[in-house]
Amino acid sequence: MARVEAAPAGGPVVEGWRARLRLSPADTRALGADTLLTVCVIAAELLLTAFGPPDMRATGWPAMVGLSLLGGLALVLRRVATFTAAVVALGSLFLSVVTVHQPLTAAIAIFLVTYTVAARLPLRRAATTAVVLWLPVLVLNLATPSDYRLDGMSAAYLMFINGLMALVTFLIGRTVHSRRTSTLALEERAIAAEANQRALAEQAVGDERRRIARELHDMVAHHVSVMGVLATGARRVLNRDAEAADEALATIEDTSRTTLREMRRLLDVLRTDAEPAAEMSPQPGLAGIEALVEQVREAGLPVTLRVDGTPGPLDSGVALAIYRIVQEALTNTLKHAGNATAHVRLSFGVYWLIVEVFDTGRGPAPGSDQSVGHGLVGMRERVALYGGTLRTGPRPGGGFRVYAKIPMEQA
Image (cartoon, rainbow, N blue to C red; front, side):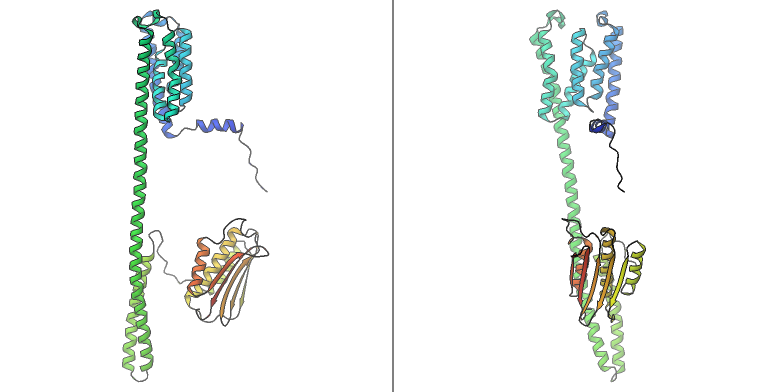
């Protein structure tokens, strides 16, 4: 029975806000630093208000504390919610106009939010946000009566000073943004260069291993040819010259040991660093197929095994290839066939050796490519090694079929 999961409470809107509230470690550190800065600014402003000139307390303590806290909220949110901080800073600015009191936190918030949007946002969005922040400030400078201006300075001069400070703050932020961008690009380039260097080193190691493997292969092939020639000569002179035959057999013995050592070195060269060392145990063959089928049955897949003909003497490599084909096919059936049964048929004829594994499962998914994959590729390589053919694909009646045919003279 399918399990039905309940929809998250609150719907997608609430989930979107929850996702926004999940802060990364960097944002958490930034939020902590900005909170500490805000506490220091608010504390300094309250101390100046309490011990400064009396005209600083003309608005009243509740309004001053409220405006300070509102400006402080913009400072706290400037790096974790930049646009929200800009809106809060504008709100603090308009409330200061209404109450005729400009808190220190509101002024600092305007500057720091301008720096933040310039340092963190793309140029167009940063410039638009900065204009939205500073345009009301310039308008207020123009509309402020001369009695409220510092030392009676003109509106044009006040607008120039504020515009210049806004421009300098914005340019500092863009400089930081450009430096961060270039640093990030250099880091990415360094990572790419390191990965490329690692790939080139691995390729060089692989090329050298293949070269050594070819040399060892030629050496092993030479030793095997020598053993074949010596064995033929020993058989021919065995009845006529026992001493010469014994010498040839001793040479074959030494050569076989040398060949075995070279074969082990060849395997060590071909083995990659990620592969574990091979276990010193006999490789499975035809005798292990019955145990394999029984193991798959215990795993929950009903399997029938049918053997036609009498298995003759087979090379150990062919027996191992048959075992691996059956093993891979049954493993794929366990993974992909679902509720199904499997059938294994081994047929030993005069000219051909046939291995067939098929199941009654749901078969490959529509549109999936069953011709690729390490398992099927491995089967095809094993069969081709002994001059055989392999056919895999969906069965007409449903399920999947693996069919391998190996000539007996190769086996």
